[in-house]
Length: 239
Image (cartoon, rainbow, N blue to C red; front, side, top):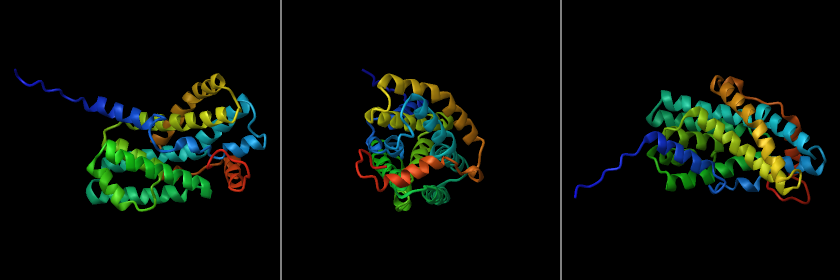
């Protein structure tokens, strides 16, 4: 009997990889972080569905969501224009910039620890020589959006789908944290996630048309909440 050869569709492979990386089961430890939301809840700034939706919308559009989207978009641009050692060097420099853009010690820890965990497990589960080269050269600057974007780029993922998925996973984690803190219930949390989906698409489109000159943010309350979280006595989350 002739052997049956199964041809792998590269687009399907990329889609499955992206779904795996965005799953809550992917071991990056995202559940341990609230991104300053825990302090906002303790102080009563975020206390119901409306205030939570406003808070998350601002962080997505004007805070770390916006910057992370730009970094992922830049990873894809680098991947399209460079190769070899020049590609790896550019990614390492971008990762250093991404680390510098974190406002507080806890947000930096959140970014680096998730990036380290993501790169480590992805090298083992979804290996690629470019990821090995990145891991060998990136040092301590394992910025999560750069590591995630690099993995998506080398595995042939679509840039828009990658950024949309990354931002929605980020949003979903914050919603999950809000449910665990009893700010909202599960149904209300999912309604917020659905309501902000179109905002994510807007951020993604803008990020893909942006450059590193567009980095920056004005989610000041979130930054202040993160500062205060470092000295908060009772804490469920690491940020």
